[in-house]
Length: 232
Length: 130
Image (cartoon, rainbow over all chains, first blue to last red; front, side, top):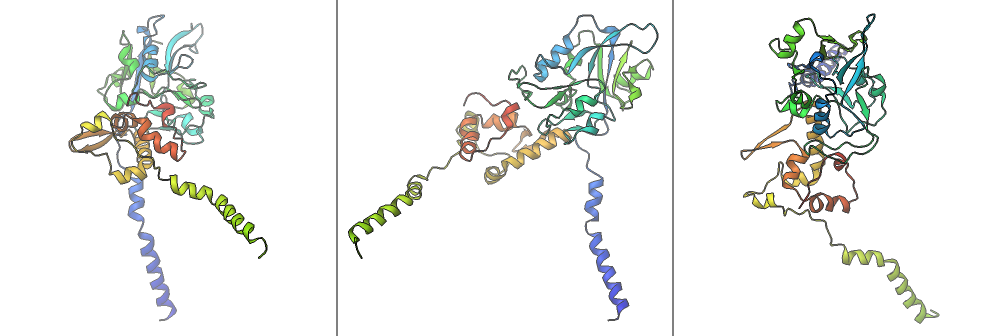
């Protein structure tokens, strides 16, 4: 065998071995569509004009559904001040905005914070080490740290809140997977909150946003929040 | 040999003392933790079966739970599938503990024996009762 043939055969063998893992690589790139499908993009529209002063039904429902302790919150009453002259402070119910480009996910050291394919930003509390970077970076201050183990359970289907991890609104993800609405949306007596698929133009939220009156809080930061407000 | 009558019994006593812990274990170490399957739900089952075979569950249940955890939390895949026309959800609390409602006699017996402390129950609610 002369040198040329040897090199040719060698190159052929190397090329065929390299092709071996190719199908695996391709299947990795095209990950299968899971239950949390990218077809959905969950979002919320809150009509602040329908909010009654002193009402805390959504917040109570959230605590009850998710076993949140009294010192923490997943949805809270915040006061914002629009950046226009002579604007008066506006109280709004503020929850995790489930940003499309979430800062909290970017900073998480252990990949405990992540965005599901359907756009819900979650914390894998099995993995969270409690460093609280995400709390610093969240523009909405919608995350809180569990300083004390919370034993009380109002909803036995939801886990207890363990000391040492960060917690926040998860859009009641276990309810969404079952086809239900988040607890706050369901509880609101004035139907001020609407929840649905932003990708579906026929959904209630998409229609409300299409009116052009819905505003987001601090979209200028670039995290693309998915909670919209009407009547600000 | 000088002092034969003292040295040989002394040696025997010495060897006996040194090997005493081993001998003691030989006699008493037949205790093996046995996970109890005596719960109302399991007793009612006509064909006793788990989501996977007994051998797999015995050695790999932690891996099964980890797979379930990741697929539920990360991908929202909550359904495990059908076994004999019964639908199973991927859930420690709602699937495993529904049958194995005797945490003390099922989980804890082996976990205590091998001294592992899984953190499942920090958050997930253990079933009351038997």
